[in-house]
Image 1 (cartoon, helix red, strand yellow):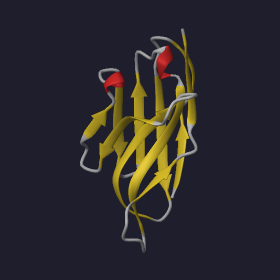
Image 2 (cartoon, rainbow, N blue to C red):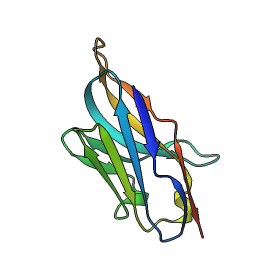
Image 3 (cartoon, rainbow, N blue to C red):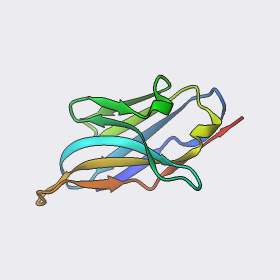
Length: 120
C-alpha cells in the first residue's frame, strides 16, 4: 500500500491549507483513513479520522477548525484546515487501516508525512 500526501506548506496564522492523501496498491478493504501529526519533541497524535461509513472523530484541539472528508471511489482522504494556529505546526501523516488482498488481518499503513508550518 502506498500513501501519497500533498498540500503541506507554510501559512500565516489564521490561514488555511488542504491536505490530500491518495492510497494505492493491493487494497482489499479500507476500515478507516485519517491524519496524525507530530511536532518536534512530541509524540504522534491523532488529528482526525473518518471511517468507511463516513463517521468522523477529531482531536479536541482541531474541532471546529479542521474537516476531514473522503472520496471512496478514489481511496483519497482530505483534511481541510482553517483558522490555523502556530501550535498546528507539525509533520502531518496520512494513515490507512485496512486489508490487502491475501491477508486477513488489518494493518495500519502510513504516508511519508508532509510538513505544515504556521507562522505567527
